[in-house]
Picture 1 (cartoon, rainbow, N blue to C red):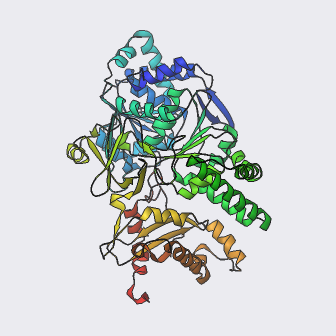
Picture 2: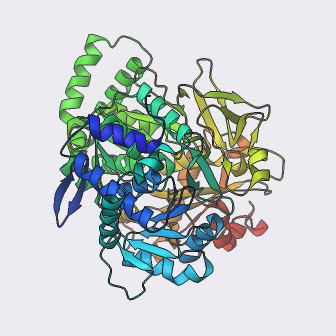
Picture 3: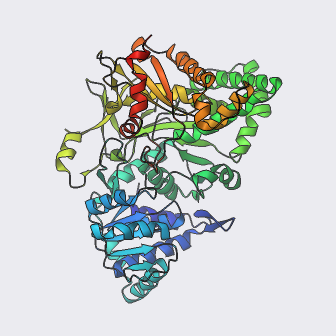
Amino acid sequence: MDVRTLPELFLHSVERYDKPDALRYRRDGAWVDISARDLRRQVETFAFGLLDLGVAPGDRVALLSENRPGWAVADLAILSTGALPVPVYPTLAGEQIAYILRDCGCRVCVVSSRAQLGKVLSIRADTAVQRVVTLDPVAHGDASVLSLERVTEAGERRRDADPAALRQRLDGIDPRGVATILYTSGTTGRPKGVMLSHHNLLSNIEAALAVFDIGPSDVSLSLLPLSHIFERMVGHFTMLHAGATIAYAESMGSVARDMLEVRPTIVPSVPRLYEKIYGRAMDAALRGSVMRRRLFLWALAVGERAVEARLQGERVSPSLAARYAIARRLVFAKLQRRTGGRVRMFVSGGAPLSPRIAKFFWAAGLPVYEGYGLTETSPVIAINAPGATRLGTVGRPAPGVEVRIAEDGEILCKGPNVMLGYFGLPEETAATIRGGWLHTGDVGHLDRDGYLVITDRKKDLIKTSGGKYIAPQPIENRLRMSPLVSQAVVVGNRRKYACVLIVPDLENLRRHAAAAGTPSASDTELLANAGVQRVYEDLIEEVSRDLAPHESLRRCALVARDFSIEDGELTPTLKVKRNVVEQRHRERIDAMYDEKLEP
């Protein structure tokens, strides 16, 4: 790669790919394009505006916004000044935002809207924030609150007065110095600020483009939060460097519509998206006529056999190829059309993806490449790739990255992608990186061909009172395969056996109950119904048949409300905060271990 820093990467890209549709977003019901030239102009004037505000090299500048072109412009402008962008999830509450702003000492904060401005102003007294820049026009009497228009106007004046100032900043950036600070999602405690260098991120971008063929004809749908390292590296920097068009989904709720309208070729996402698409497809097929259901299941079986052969490098027989062609035409073409008809790769990360769901997508002609990484590794450690995919694994180590397994099964990583350290936490940095090897906190193994298999988070492993260990995520993934399950959390730490909290998919459960003759009722009454309880008891019994005896689920408790980001039970990337869920549902959990209920 012939660039040294992230701003150089951006400038190289817009010069090489002078395209009319570098970015795309939805405004007033229509899609609007931003050209490469206009994008460069916006980044430059914003950067000069930041210089006018007194932003200095090394300053931390918070970025609190939903996915939008303004996020990309602000990120690149902050980087161009030599300052450090600190992305903050827009779903965080005020006190969570305050913790991050205090921890990294931000003096300037860029926010998207009036709602985000309100959060910052409500906690600003507890932080060092002196200036707030709003991307949306927001009328406000506070002189410290500045509109984007006002900042860019000042930037234009600064550029006219001192045109060399920004170039001097760009030339002074240290490629191996801190580029950005990203705060971990805090599933097990307070978020920590991960310091990544330009070199860290550029090494991962280069590795991604060595694995995947991405170019200016591609369109990537950006739907994961850009505050997360996965979307920022894959859906932001990598797409910019490859010259692909980035289209911003209007919201998570509009993804189905946005896919149809944007017709993306690449979609990076987390397993939850794939689970939802799979669940809807299965539910639609199984609710159809007997003939439709048989056709779907036949097509799926044929597709899975063809995919298994191809992924294993085996020849697909003429007979199987002919049947698969029919299956694609009669069944899978509909699913492809629902995703816009042009998707050539989904990229999955952030959490384990069920092999069964991955195989379903591959059978439908929609390849899902699952990878693995951490914020601390920029993020990619391993990735399945075209021509080198093994379902049930997260692929082989990325180019330039080394992986080894410690004696206790923990995955260790070494390479140019490994972080500089945690901001202000030298002791935690030293505990995490030992002898150049980053200790991931995840447990897994490398198979005989070098593909990495993840078992679970080391801290998530459940140890029963009998001393046996249970990995909860594979069990939870199995349960979520059912169209009747929205979410599941296995419990049992220091208990005699494992149980599970299940959040039913109420829409599908109501259809199932109506078909079984269960009277209409409120959510609470429905979940208390003895017949409904038996449905879920049968489900955990079915799943437990394939588990080791100590992993078997003894009981379940039904929870009527989905776990949510807003209630603090999920991280912004939809990972379960187990300690929060267990605290909130302590009575339900204790009831499952009531000795009076023992058989």
